[in-house]
Length: 206
Image 1 (cartoon, rainbow, N blue to C red):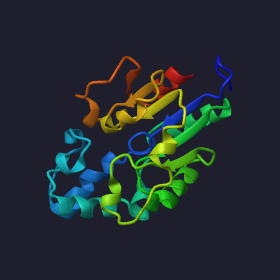
Image 2 (image 1 turned 30 degrees about the vertical axis):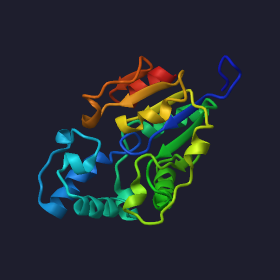
Image 3 (image 1 turned 45 degrees about the vertical axis):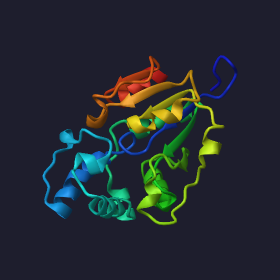
Image 4 (image 1 turned 180 degrees about the vertical axis):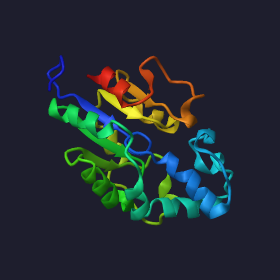
């Protein structure tokens, strides 16, 4: 579908905690690994080492396990995600999943999308958070210089740490998926809207 400038509508979608319930996986993992009982709603920081009070060694160990294919494929879909994305694809919108996962997680991530009837969305691994530090020589499939050449009309994101990747798109409409770690953050401008669920996101994008 074309917008008023006769361009294809392009949508950026984050993977973790937008498409799938990644955050809900971590309290159980932390309890299993370190015996710490910290509920999901108490994850007040996007930085998981800070939310769970982990040292660097513990954090690295946890993140390595969380990026194993078995773990990545186990994440539950966020209700309404695949239905919404497919409705956009049916309208001719271009949907790109831009994830901060390292490229070593690409195959499992692609398989998760395919299993959830999202075979037609594009998937790119962008180094948003420096996760190459705990998975050595992993690489990323999308370089920042190429990402900044991309245009999006809408974005779905949960991480306040990722908002800086939208500075080059002053007209971008950002739907912030409501999560415990973003409830106290300040949005950069009026283009950001907090959304509780995919139904609200779908209303805003159309």
